[in-house]
Image (cartoon, rainbow, N blue to C red):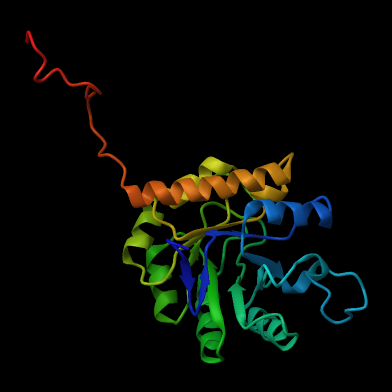
Length: 258
């Protein structure tokens, strides 16, 4: 806990946030979550059985004494849908935290930022801790922060694409001007992508398909954990300056005979 992640009123030692979809089975999901070292897990409210708890549910496989539950509004295409889904999650006792998604395009799954901003303002006023998923747009991230978002979650690449960080400069700019945590969400495909996100200054990384879609999800979860830790350490250490030409590792200045 020497370098904790603080969001709103909660403190986390892990800077990796994981999802619950696309795993081959719930037992594999549980093992992957354990290997990831994550302390926060996001679940799609619309894909969880919260009305009949006598039936098997994904929630049965999440130890909420160890993992903080972050409901999300996945598959919502309007501000009203997302707001209703967030309210449902809170009324069902899941959490007053919400990962807010308002999708604007079915094929790319890019967010509808106008509707996202509208929903953020409403939910913040209702006492939710809102973490909105948005484009890697510094202006929109600033507007979401001004609307009361507890963190901003710019995408690294389209959801589930595994393309890695497409606009590293944008992530750096967002971090530079943000006064709330910046969590890179979506597009991470392998450990190096997670490390790059953290090296750019992101406070955390949220991923699902990068782990669940791997040939060995449990091994990939551990790799992601280590990558996030390494990237964060490298960011704090401060990388060397980039140079146009070579610089000898063992300079000849001061060598006898020269």
